[in-house]
Picture 1 (cartoon, rainbow, N blue to C red):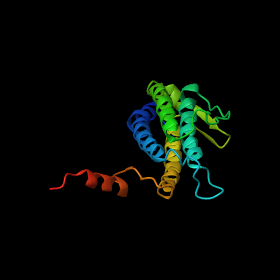
Picture 2: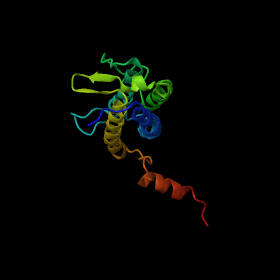
Picture 3: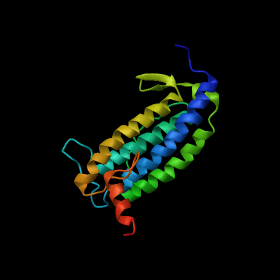
Picture 4: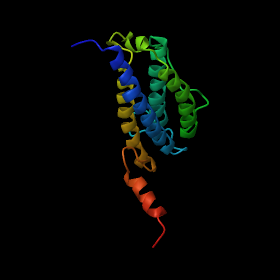
Length: 178
């Protein structure tokens, strides 16, 4: 296999990963916002993360990966949830506030930065741009887990890739009676 070329890395960033990150951020935020404010501690069983802890894991991991590309390396220092984040509304606000400046930095990466091989815990050594696919898959995976928490918590599941049952019902209920 041939190594990734500069123009390919730039295309992946601008044509695939940045639009993907923007779209998945919107969807992830809607799932986080759907966590009832008083149910942040919900967990489906004793070995599962709480809803808020799982949502934090998604958000903090995205920030870690988005920081790594401009920095040219991963920072694996612990990222505990700030004490100010007590519920889903706090986390959704933090997530948006922290996503935007990191996203903006990604738009300014050079082809050289995109091609720099980064080490991920000794497990992977990939060109930086390829870690955006990794983090997208990570977020989608854990967001799927988190979305499965919603109904047992008494929450509605938001639309993700088209209508959910709950968003379709809300749309129908909003229609004026003929």
